[in-house]
Length: 266
Ligand SMILES: N[C@@H](CCC(=O)NCCCC(=O)O)C(=O)O
Image 1: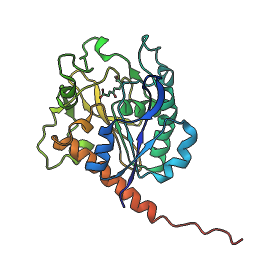
Image 2 (image 1 turned 90 degrees about the vertical axis):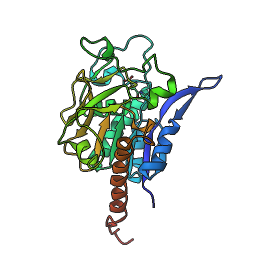
Image 3 (image 1 turned 180 degrees about the vertical axis):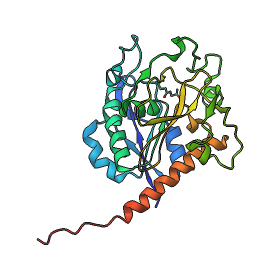
Image 4 (image 1 turned 60 degrees about the vertical axis):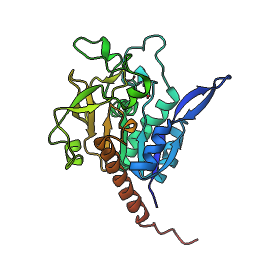
């Protein structure tokens, strides 16, 4: 049996009537069915109320990227500039879901917005427009790149801790700890990392690009870039998903072998 992988939905308005829908990009469905080796389960942005009943059925949690941004009030940040997209329903679901998944040891992989949610869920803060900060790069979608290239093209290098999680899971692959090429499609980023969020990857301007969760009973990792866009051609992206998938499979086996508590005779 393949592990069930929860994928966080955004609320997006589609069609002429701009009807709200709970949606994920097909890239996340493909990566779950592909290198992760699981079965995708879409998690609607239905709020904290669904977390307790959903989580026990999940063997892994994939927190997706999105153009929307975590509400600043959730990390005591300044209000967003007018027109900055937000998704309160998603925030109200993913932040408690992240905290519960970490406590329960459900393997978790957070990507871009998901990485930012992970940091906020654990008590960290965000920068809202990195490109406006002194001595920082523009990490947003490069205007000079054709859209499809933006997702598979590489925008900058990331320096990776030589003794960190990525170094271990990329063992045997061809890579350089001082220059891991990644794509980049974000305006926001980790400002103050949460106490349990241990940075393990940095852009040339110091932007935190990868981190592990200290003390998590299961696999718990986040990246600011998008490995779901180039896993078919980038062995490092593929391996990250394969390791996450292996952790989810282990979770599924453990869950199936959990002792069933005896129930009192009627
Ligand atoms: N909105 C946040 C997070 C950015 C993010 O997840 N980008 C992916 C967008 C989807 C796509 O265009 O492929 C930020 O701006 O930092």
